[in-house]
Length: 265
Image (cartoon, rainbow, N blue to C red; front, top):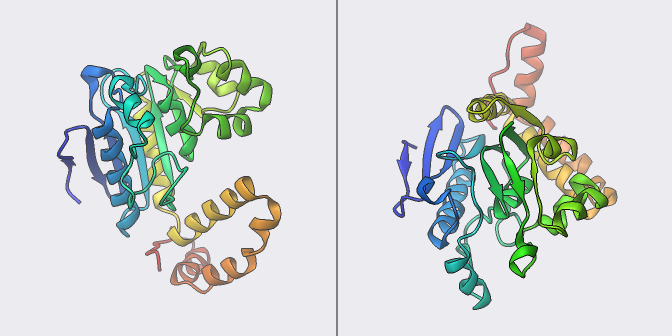
């Protein structure tokens, strides 16, 4: 896949080896999400999901900010009218409905990260933020409430009290607080967040794809459905992975004391 921008000019795509960089490209509006950007992001993640050569993706925002949230003037009436925000056959970037992403996603945050920005981060697997990032789940101040996953995931990630502190007040908080409550995993100096996110994604992309996807699948089942649901398929899954070419390559690389070269088979 070559570097490209989607037809709406809202999303950029760049490949670096087995890593796909997905950029929010509406910097003049602080990357606020209109309907075109929402659908473009879903289509980009679907391309990532469907390309066997891509093993990890990084989501980031062009310009000074990750996103100022939803463009409510356009998106609000669409939601109120029951209009779908994402194509029915596409991967849901929020991981709530429709197709579920099975491959890992790292997110790089900077500047303002509001409303859907936090929810996209919570739907990702690893979150890196610049020290100047400012967060806010501010829907309550607009007379509504978060409907993109924050009420589901922030209590899991941050604990009940920490989640309610920010969900119920709509106040903004800084990157240090985001790190304290587990919303992000690492902080970088401003401008270095994307480089760090890509480095992590490249490390993931060097691992065995079948093992990476099985790890995600098992961990998600445990969080979303409970330990019993995660245990039920575990032995079958591990036997399938152990029978793969990648498992044999992993063993040979250990014996030969070299870095493994995984193919995803």
